[in-house]
Length: 96
Image (tube, rainbow, N blue to C red; front, side, top):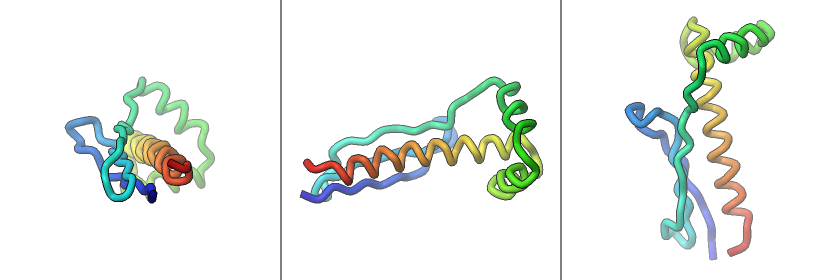
């Protein structure tokens, strides 16, 4: 048996983030949603204020914006993707 996975973007109207689909021998066998978590704006500002300039620049580039809120969203989107990928990797590495 072969296990694979696919990660696709979630629609923005559903909160953005990622959908994970798990496959076993090319048949869908499960999955899940990994939305971008909504949070208190103060948490985002604490995150921003705690970043060194190089990390701020990185997340602004990732967001393609000069707005710290957009950088935070890009960070949260990347975190959601990493969570989905971790689950997919665990699925594909685990014997059936």
